[in-house]
Amino acid sequence: MIQHVAREVEASDIPSCLAFYAVLGFIEVAVPESLSGRAVWLECERGGTQLHLLLTPEAQPERGHIAVVVDDFEATVRSLEAAGHEVDRRRAHWASPRAYVTDPAGHIVEFMAFGPGG
Image 1 (cartoon, one colour):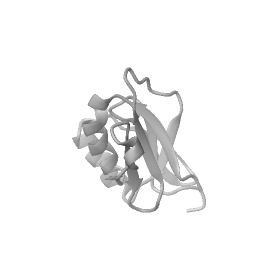
Image 2 (cartoon, one colour):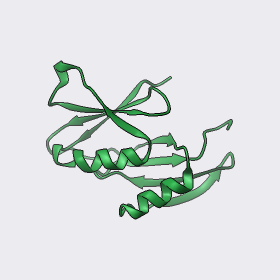
Image 3 (spheres, one colour):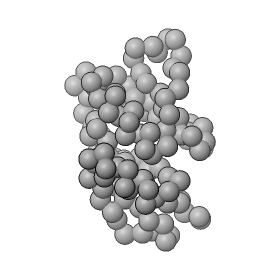
């Protein structure tokens, strides 16, 4: 099991990233005191997987992407579009609807109704 993924973001992107990832089911959690002011941690409400946003001046998005399973795929699409994000629906794999979206810091995120094996 992957415990967390880390992504570099500029501090100015944190408020919009928090709102973006909340739509995908992530909530902000406390960071260890030793990382205070250097990172923001988010945790998936449906499990313990975390996303660590590392505060980095002049952060650049990575070429790869992360993928998350959402509770309600269509509601997530509507919420992201209503917030002004462009959702790129893709061909379903293993019969799961899926799409790509770019977070406010420029990182690509895939989201889907369910993972392989349902």
